[in-house]
Image (cartoon, rainbow, N blue to C red):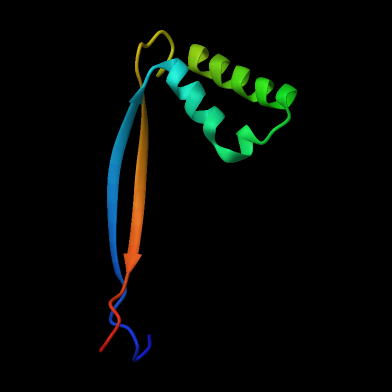
Length: 80
């Protein structure tokens, strides 16, 4: 706590991103540390994602997959 700022505030926001299985693979491919991998390693990661989507009961055979997100926001107002 400081005299320069008011109380710390917090809010959480939830969102569900609905994607096709191919869209999930594209989303994973766009993550910076996956995109930066050498092509053989990147291909292995993306194939693992495809296999996971095809194997898991919650995603197997589905035309659409839900990716849940939660964003936590913190802020405080500057005093005076």
